[in-house]
Length: 188
Image (cartoon, rainbow, N blue to C red; front, top):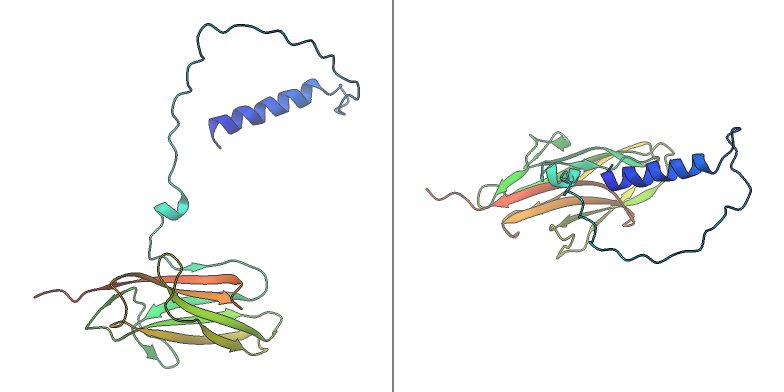
């Protein structure tokens, strides 16, 4: 909490105490208001000392950290990017993909559907601005409690830089995001 917010909170509490009687109930009487007087101020007040601001959690966090949104009802329990699918699941987790070496980036997800309602998931590969040159993949989720699926994107047809697998509930609400980085093959 900033010092300004603390001062405002303490001021509000003191005002509340001043307006209440010994029983703890707020006084119902109208306060006496004195007429305002004007007064010249010779010097402006000194500015407050600067307060160090801590970086936001998103800025301090790893830019390639996977995010699963906590929510009731349908939610992701697993979201992994990998260069391969092995036995109907992701291979070794991978977040940095190299053009010319890695052919595809797979986005594998598992979701929990406690009410077993049929729904639709949209999976998109988006840039840092949330934009994608391609329409999202629409995945119909059957009326069952557990569901897993994956989609991939070709690495060679993507630009070098950041990209993320974005999973949304019927295109309305984000369920998770798995960022990846695409790099050029290193020169020998």
